[in-house]
Length: 260
Image (cartoon, rainbow, N blue to C red; front, side, top):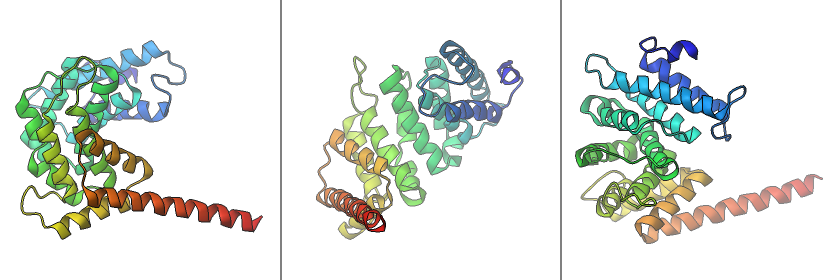
């Protein structure tokens, strides 16, 4: 890691891989890594993100969206906020046309979720033009997640837009509630901003809920509550999913009892 921390000695992929690995090793232990003090982890992450900021702001260097996404995800996982300059720079670079169009649905979803975590739990204060958020949350971006992403991708984005449209402590909302609601509904309706049939919307809603994990279901429900979305079909799907999971758990307990 010391080699990567030297200015100019690493590529964006090197930096992203180290940040991602630190977060993976830490697991659920926030700010804690074997053999390193909390202060050492924070210092290392700040240095890595500072270098990433230098790379993403250099127009002559081609940076992948995945590298930026992995870096922000690692920071959020560790709950360590590097400098506001570094976060703002990485997010602005991600919103640029080349990077955002090349980003996978997972990279976009993880990026949005990561910055919402950093704002909520680490006190990050976004200093970005409104245009940056409009680019990240454009109809085209949401359509790609709805059409090619997973249920967890959708859940991450839903919760992220709900958080970003809500005040966090003394910090004002980053995006308007209206924009957040429009994008949430668009995502739940399969990515189509207009002209969605009821049958299509119901089918997509059922698909998201059917394929979601328990954590994803919780995120979808929380996002809908924050945005005051009271879609009857969505609520019915959530209840059906919970009932199905409860039934499977009860059946599993019954089978284990029979085997004994």
